[in-house]
Image (cartoon, rainbow, N blue to C red; front, side, top):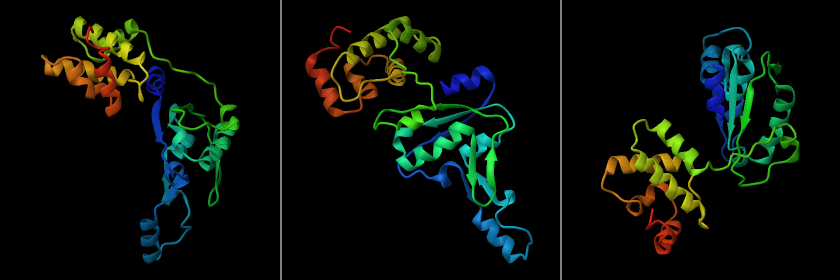
Length: 224
């Protein structure tokens, strides 16, 4: 969605990939300590904590951008509660506080897209600052259209076969259901391997051994 917004509006896409332990130095800013040290050794004047030595991370880059920006904060549920709380000021007022420089406000607020895989519940205060949109799996027909766009020239038989098989897999009780990305990768694999069948290439679309074993035992793909 963020990439589509960026492409449709001509805005620059800035991505922040969240992970366990992410903090302000990864997400907002840091200082260029080697340059500060060289500045001191050279007897330079002026403050060490100035724009000259500031390293802009994705959030600060998005706030200070003068051109249109789409900011993607990806997989926010991987971050901890403290980082989630920090985002409240940014999402409410499009500003952040940097102790050494003061408050930085966005002259042109970015479009912000936040994604979550629901590995943990997000706080109500964060959700109140967002418009919620659930992206469900597409129908087999719609997914086949996506495959054709992403793989120009793909044979119709492969597109329909793969999308039909993925729809059957999503009807099973699997540990990890395949997404659209796996569907495209599966079609690519069948194109590259020509003679391979669906069960031989299950490792492209399913990434858990128990899921692969279950599908093979159930025979759900035998008529696909």
